[in-house]
Length: 139
Image (cartoon, rainbow, N blue to C red; front, side, top):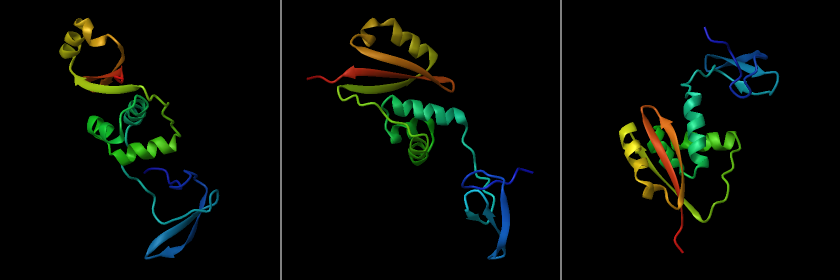
């Protein structure tokens, strides 16, 4: 059986506070939050949270992160707010990304023309790799 915690502050310090619609109601002593059920919900792996925040910092939009990781763009937005992540201002750079397998990635790096005039980072996505490349906007 999982431990019972306040869904608002994760405190285990709560008391019974009546019955609402045939459900036991509780009140958290720490944050004064009233709740009726212990939210189990599905937990998204910390790997995906870290990867989503990393991709956000690299300049990808919420919807692009959704397409790449398969995690809701609303979840990504909530994580950005929760962890107070601020994206640095980069007005003269444009990130682009590609999803490649190991062989395609090796072929990509064989051609040095692919990396001239830009910066790049490679990150793992399961059995594939994501190549994020920054290029200056053309004036």
